[in-house]
Image (cartoon, rainbow, N blue to C red; front, side):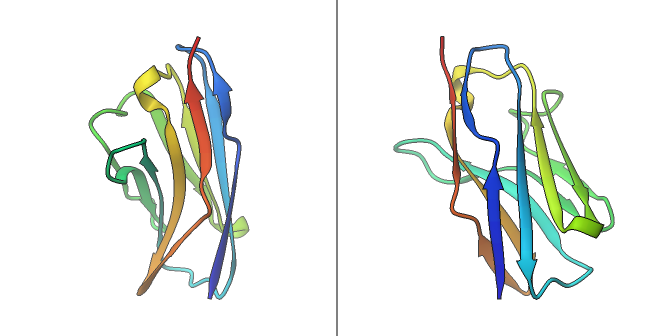
Length: 114
């Protein structure tokens, strides 16, 4: 079993920045993929960014150049630095861990509004 705890969401004005963190605990394998998904009201959950333990990244086109995913393998933690935030980035952001099975965090709300 893997537990994921997210933090860092909140309310920010357009153009602002936020940094999300997700700490994994439990049975963690050294080779895995961690990432961030988001779900806005009335929409399907979508990939934001993911990163393998080897450092390979994948970003949604809508966030390329604005968001940066990183991770600290020693701490089993993944981060999402979000810059130049737009109102359309408003969503619940979920952390995901994949190694055979898929685990999700509880989600953290990000609201971009003036």
